[in-house]
Image 1 (tube, helix red, strand yellow):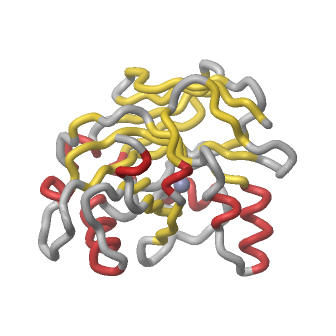
Image 2: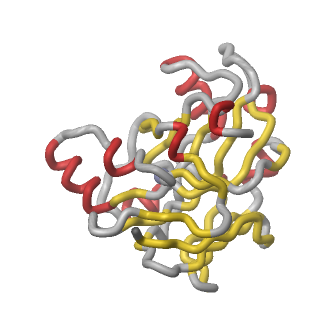
Length: 209
Ligand code: ZN
């Protein structure tokens, strides 16, 4: 899939209680959605450039869903989603804190170039199978984030119903479904690996530029 084939890049904030807590945020009563430009998507491979001199750049490892059909009320997640993978919702955390205080949109903190790397697409095995499978981020060989989709506050079904009925969902849309606890900064030269069920499905090196 080239970026031309992607449509909307939805992201969900605060979908794991322990992550909301680690940033001092309340657990939301409804899904908290935001968007990234399609230009943010790059493969998890080789060297990925991150902006230098703008404070901390945090990794957020997430399960990413690809929508293959137009949303219709009552459609099950297994009908709407044909592929899944793992991705990184890179975040300029200091910039985001400033934007939050000012009540400004998050785009500058969340939507910059290369802010949405994704691994290769895998068949979607159904929500129950995904919920029971561990996913993990290793930084320089050490596990920094590990989670299960079953710990999400809002299920895949709830997220898709919310996005589809409120904003619309169609083939080519992708959904970053939120990050578990353990987010933290990346530095120049850091080696990142994303693991699905204990297997590395994507690896990259960070270059601060
Ligand atoms: Zn995120």
